Every structure is written in C-alpha cells, then in structure tokens.
Image (cartoon, rainbow, N blue to C red; front, top):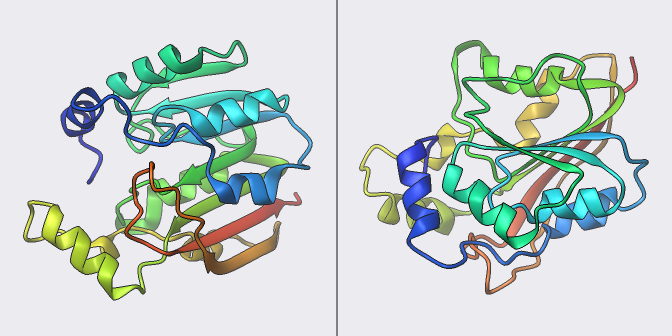
Length: 208
C-alpha cells in the first residue's frame, strides 16, 4: 500500500486493531540503551513504537498520513511526551538536523528521482543522532507474490520501495554504520505483516 490517505483511513476504520499494540522487536533489541532526546517516528500508525520511546524519556514527534490512525493512537494512550502529527511525511519532509533519532519501521517509501525523500529523512538526523530503519526482506519470493496478489494493483511491485540496506548508500563520511544486516523477524500473530520472516535493519550514527 502506498501513501494514500483515504486507503489508510479505511484500513484503520474497518477494524478494531490493525497492529498488535506492541513495539517492534527490532526497536527493543537495538535502542533500549540509547540516551533519550528528540525522536521522529515516521509512519507511526497506532503509536506503539512512539509510546515505547516516550516511556523511556524520548520527546517524540509521531507522524502519520492517516488521521484515523492518529485518533486510534490517542485513544490507546495519549502520552504527554508525544506530539501526534497528521501529515504526509514524504510531501512534508522534516527539517534538517532536527532529531536525535529518526525511526522508520516498514514505512512504504517509494523510490523517487534523486532519492529526495529518503535523503530528507537521513538529513533530519542531528549530529550525534541515530538513523534507525527497519524494512521487510524483499529477497523473499513469497513476500513479492503475497503483495502482488493482495494489492489489487497489477503494477504493484514491492521492489519499488526502499529497504533499510539501501539507506546506507545515502550516508557519507559523517556517518558511522553500527548495524546493517538481515535478521529473523519475531512474528507476533496478532500483528500485520506476518507473511515475511526476515527484517533488514540499519542503525547508523551521525558523527558530524
């Protein structure tokens, strides 16, 4: 599914819960000991990751294109350290050098000429801050077949979307890559996306 507000609103309003309400396992595994500061949660959905960060002292800007998702997030727990922000983060990119953490989990970012949107998310990390990107492992053939059969769009191709590994190409000498790997995904049966079994994970620190 691409960045279409009406489609995402329908997805959230047609069911009581889209996701498990648990934070993503990669987030817990990689960022538990990170010193809190300001964080951008891109495509926050029902807010589980944003709440996990806020509970650990982060001041979180949680952005989603779906007003229905944000309403659900507030109903579940309107944490005082979270700013729920209704916006298309691709069309309204963050300001440069703004956040101590930019976190993106399974965000459907379509490839664009010049990689403008992807570079904007990288550029939003402040010096000393962390870029954390998790995506589906699109080398899994059954994921491509599953996505194509359920998309309703014969032209849909999941390989049109960036993976976390590809963000490494946008990092220059001012960055240090700490993690860039494919790893098994801990599947929560109550959450979406259970068709894939591996994640790609990128964690990098901007050193200047």
